[in-house]
Image: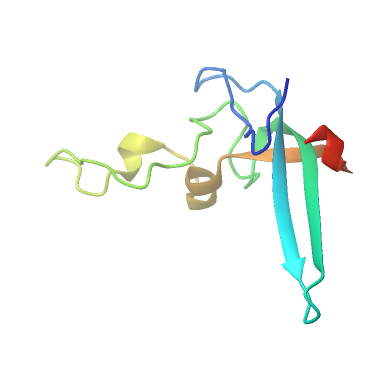
Length: 112
């Protein structure tokens, strides 16, 4: 059973170039000047593709996960880039693999 705000999680190894499918929900509301409130819950099903965001790197190269926001870098490698994603373009080190939107739907209040 899915819960609101459920996020997409990959369960493959870093060397895998397969396709994973998962879902995500987003909620939003807005109030106009009269005080009327509109609410919406959207559900998307997405599929992680084997291809990188930047097609310069082949699908079977490197790790697809986004680069960590912090890193303890050994003294012999001050940039840390080569240790994280050897040979990938900056876009692929930052964003990883492509995602394809499979479906989007509005979720009814009784389904939330």
